[in-house]
Length: 181
Image (cartoon, rainbow, N blue to C red):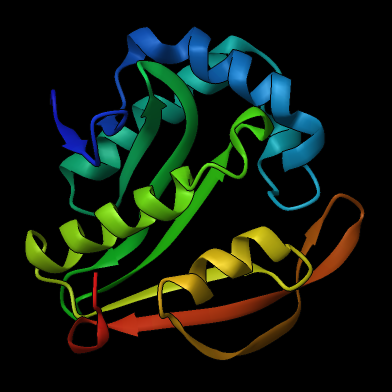
């Protein structure tokens, strides 16, 4: 599995390889403070081996057609993660999730990465519906869904306990025939 989705000259989405384990762990550590308020898995990543387990899980789920997790690489450097979660081939839908190192905010990296992955999901995987779920107060994440034309479906109240508090999720979706990417 040596696959790359080329977004542009500076940006690629790469299927995970175990050789990137130290890079992923270092990136998670560096951004722990920014990620922890939104992502329930962050406190569970305590050592390099936890990142390796994640990569191995990603590869297993991809082989089974259940998920597709990738690293976001900008100018040859790992700067974040993006993926299709819970791919449902029968109903032709999935959810997309992402996070980016705070050093790279404001450059359009996630917007372009999401656009490329949505294009891939609709064209290559023949999916019909893609959902983005983001904390209602995670303004940057919600803005990406809105900027790309995802439709607001509603709010899931107190849906997850993260960082010692319940958070609400905004739910966005887009259908294949609505996508203008």
